[in-house]
Image (cartoon, rainbow, N blue to C red):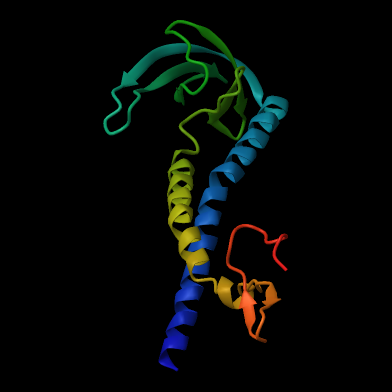
Length: 184
């Protein structure tokens, strides 16, 4: 009785691991769709401005293979100067380049560039959580599948061997790989 109960808890734990891993893997995709929608909304409702790439800093990778580069933008809005950072993801401009941006009027530190990059380093945490979710799924799915009683649900069918009558009334089962058409 105790074995069955622990098996139920183990199965439930495996299912919960798969659900948690799937949710964590889904998070970066959901976040990216939300950020894309926000960038489109900023382009339609934001205040247009011109920003200048004030500086570009590249930090060594540390425990990563590739270095990370950040651009620092400086722009004026309503008589005030702002400086914000933008991560170099697909486009990385040089210092002194001018870029069109659309600024959130409620938060002047929030903008989208003409090449579609939002200010700040958004989505990093979600990306790390997505990688963790993938790792959990790699471990949890085989663990869950190993607990499924496939043999009970799909029992193996036994193959019946052809039976041949032998002189003397006995039964003979042929185990040869060759068909015995010539025997009678």
